[in-house]
Length: 171
Image (cartoon, rainbow, N blue to C red):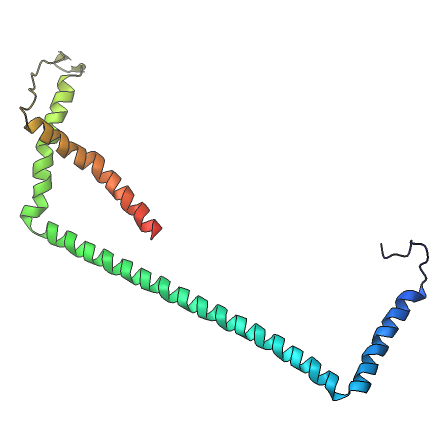
């Protein structure tokens, strides 16, 4: 809809407004001479300068963000390298490499024996009666030590790893 269906519309009205605009532009150029051209140039220069300033600010911001991201990545790489060195040093000596398994495996074997002794199952030698092995409970305070060791190794350690992943994602 361009307004042709409205009452009072005449075909020559659109042509006259274009001609009047062109005539006004030429008249201003003729009367003002270089003043009008200078004014247009100044406005264009101002707009160009504003665009250049915005571009410079954007480029500075991007450069700063890039430097921050690179610094953060380098710090993370350095932290991981130091962590790997600590693990290598910790597991490099036979005493520190075997201390965890030597503490955890007896607890695992005892816990497994208790579970198997309290579970009925079939063997090639016949049915296992619950409690037939007679695996005793550890005396206090060793029973709580065993529980703490098993919890720390199988429950707390995986949660610690998950927490580290989430903490690394938030940095």
